[in-house]
Length: 285
Image 1 (tube, rainbow, N blue to C red):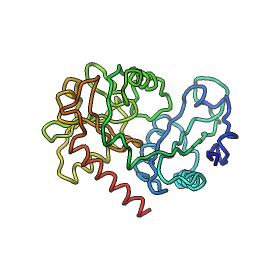
Image 2: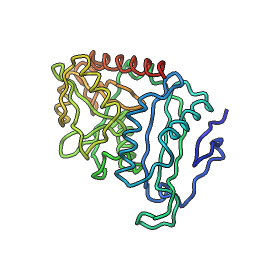
Image 3: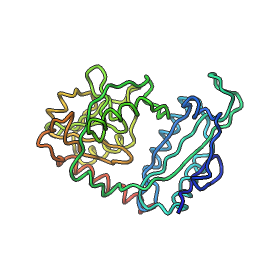
Image 4: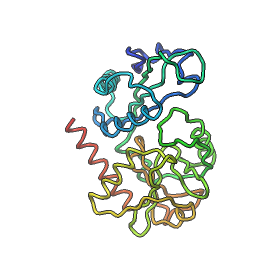
């Protein structure tokens, strides 16, 4: 079955879907995006995704392309049309179609594109072994808190990591880890979970927000601050979180093992607690 995608009010087979060459997302990267997990054919983490999308749109002065309820309805129709049981829905909003000029156009209507991807989220084999991470220079702009579709810096960083055998890159600036290329970075030392504090330097990850909530609910201590690569290498555990990895153990950094080089118990506990939360949320939807 050919995948069904959504483009500006219509559903199409992916081979027939088209966007304008004058779309400012295509020309300038003038837009934002979100990735939402699907568990048992249900969207999860819906409220946090809507809040972050609203913030990104507001920061860039882009209007919603439709109501929030209609946005969710589009995603749910895509899940049904593609018979998606587990995976993600990607959606992006751009400022719209206009003649190529740098100032914001006055009369452009926002564009909305969305599609689904099948992924194994709950039983990802990589979670059993952990993943290697490679550090790479953070080359991005200064508003990383906006989930912009301007991702060239991240593409360069991911390619750098993958070319050296990494499954993810940890971006480093001024000697400190900012975040993963497409994830939030954490270390654990003496049972303390450490992740960078929110600012314009990192994306406010939805999984980051949920992980810290789960930690608090389960009496796990955490601290929000920056950490160095050397500190990460001396940690007891390390992990990442994202829509596609949930909580994923990191077992090596730049080819050097983290602790014993196997997934740590706190990381795996957080992963199980988050999985259970998502399953329960999907069942209640």
